[in-house]
Length: 96
Image (cartoon, rainbow, N blue to C red; front, side):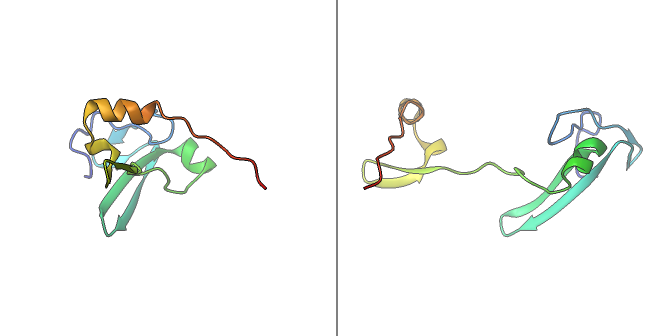
């Protein structure tokens, strides 16, 4: 069983509670995916799976930015710098 706490399994997309009968899922499907970073198991309810059977948004995107000459993941910055990053504004320039 891919989840340690089997009483609290929720749909990855809509957060609806998933019901189990022993090790069998009643109202959903398990989606499994392997990549070089690890193995992933996601649960979707039947309604969400019917709408979109793809496995998407299964892991957080790691954002890198430059700070004081170094490129580092933003989640490793101190609290003050993370807040500064959140307050940054993106400017668009006009095409020439």
